[in-house]
View 1 (cartoon, rainbow over the protein chains, first blue to last red):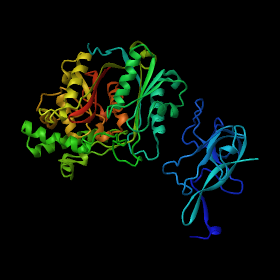
View 2 (view 1 turned 120 degrees about the vertical axis):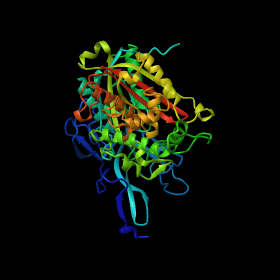
View 3 (view 1 turned 30 degrees about the horizontal axis):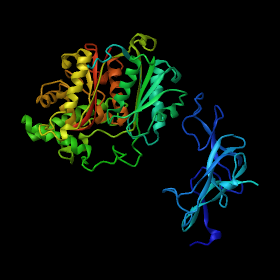
View 4 (view 1 turned 45 degrees about the vertical axis):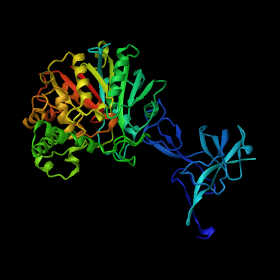
Length: 147
Length: 395
C-alpha cells in the first residue's frame, strides 16, 4: 500500500469535474443558443428550437440550492462499490445551480444525511473519495451543506 | 372478417436512410437524426409538421422517448414497436394505418439499430426468461438446416446446392458493390464464395447477412395530399403481416423447405393489391435474405416461381438486376447489412429510389419504366416459428 500522502487522486470519471482547491462541474454551452448541458452535450443541441452542433466547455457554479433529496438505505447493486461493511447509507441531493438554474443530482458529502438537508438549503460542491485501489483514490463530486 | 388492406389510400412522400455500417463514431441518436433529417428535407416538412411517429427498434432503446429525445419533439405521440427482424416494416404499417384511419394527416415511421458497440455481436441481447425448452442455436445454424432439407426434397446435388447459395450471395454482393450506402461494397465471385470455410452446417460467413448499425425513415400521408410534398409519391398497395404460432416446431409435416407464414402473408398482400401474377407484375422485390437459403426458399413462398424450381431460376439469373424479376437490387441484408429495426424501411428506401428512377444508372433494375410495382418482404424469427411482413407499393 502506498503512503497516504503520495497516493494519486484521480477523478472516477475523466472530464466531468475539476479536482483542484475550488472544484467545479465541467459542462458545455451551445454556441448558438447558450443552453448549458451537464453532462456535456455532443453532436447536437437538445433545445427543441435550436439546430446548434457546436459546444464550448464551461465550468458550472460551485454552489446551489437543494431542490429535493433522498437517501439509499439499502446497498445499491454493482457497479456501486460499498464504502465499508456493514453498509453505510448515503444521501443524494438534487441541486439547482446558482447561475445556470439547472438541477444536478449528486451524492451528499461524507458525514451528512437527509436530516441535514431541506428544500431551499444551500450547498457547495466538494470532491471526495468514491473508492480506492492500491495506488489511487478515485474521486467524485458531492454536495456539502453550507451552514 | 377479412383483410381489406388500404390500397391506394396512403402514400410515402419522403424517405431517408443512413449508410449501414459499423458506425463506431455514431450513436443511436445520431443515426436517428440523420435518417429522419433526409426524410424531412425530401418531403419539405419540419418535425413539427408530422403529427405522429412510430419508432421500430429491436434492442437499441425502449419507448417513444428513444426518438422524441434526439429529435427534441414537443408534445408528439411516439410509439415504439418491435416485431423481431420485421420491426422496421411494422413501424411503417402502423404509421400508414394511422393515416388511413384519419387520425393523423402526416406520420413518420423510423427504424434504427445500434448494435456494434453493445458488447454483443448479433441479436438477442435481452434474453427473456423462459422454460428452457427454446432452441438456443445461432440464427445461422437454424437457417442452415433449410439447405440440406431443400436439396433432399427436390433432388439437388449437394455441390450444386452450394453453388446455388453462392450464386445468391454473389448477386447480392454485386448489387451492394454499386450502392454507396451498403455495408459491404465488394463483388464476390461464386468461386471465391465456394472456397470459404463453413461456420454453421454448409453455410460460410458469406452466406450470412452483415450485422450493422443504421437507420431509415419514411413519411406517409393520405394519397390525395401527396402532391403537396412530392410529385412522385410511392403509393401503398398492400401491407400484410403474419405472426406464426410456432407450430412448425411440433408439426411432423414441417420439413424446413418452406416458410408457411411467408406464403400466407404474400397471398394476403397480393389479394390486397390485386396482383395475380407477381413474377410478371412486379418490377422488383426486396426480400429478407438473412441467410442465402432464406432467399432461395422465399422465391417460392412469394410465388415468384413454382415449388422446387427456385434453385434453377437462381442459376439462370432470373433474380439478377438485369434478370426477369430483380431481387435485392440494393444488395439485400447480405451486402447492405442488417440493423434489425431499420431493415424493413431500408427495403422500402430501395423501392423508393428504383421506382422513382433515382437509383444510379449502374444499379438500375432491368424492369425500370416497364413495370411500376415493388414488393418488400421482411421476416423475423426462425424456420418453424417466424413473423412475416409483405408490403407492395407502386408509382
